Length: 195
Image (cartoon, rainbow, N blue to C red):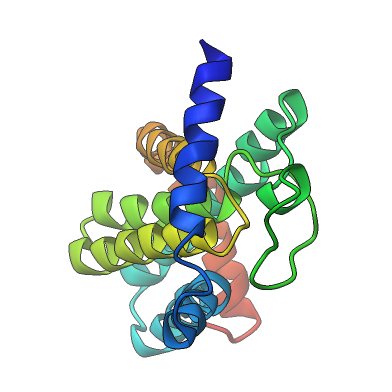
């Protein structure tokens, strides 16, 4: 059963990967989305931090960032440690990544987990438009990273599921995250004149 799923995942990967090298403009677009699009999120968060100067918005930014970083750094690493899956450009001899990436674990995609968790947490906090835009970015980055040879589709799906479930579960702890992590961090930011 697992062997069949992995084979199906590999077949779907090859279908997405086949689009690479067909059109130079498309390749540049995939390169841009897969490698640089993710930086729109921290740039957006940093800009919003200085544009929206009220405590409610800043606390929401802190909480959403903390939750998504936690999901990126803890459960994704544990899963990768329990089941290491090499990246396609390492495990498949007939593929090459579009841009350099360290040959680390492939499953689950930490980019997908981080971005979707951030987007969903903003959405759950009531910031629906930014949340939806971050979710759209996470899906676009995920597809681009499959096409560019860095991930299998199952890696992206696994990362998206992990990020969604993790953010949804941690949302039930929001008052504790707010009281014990976000508010002290906002006080520190105010003390050092960053807020």
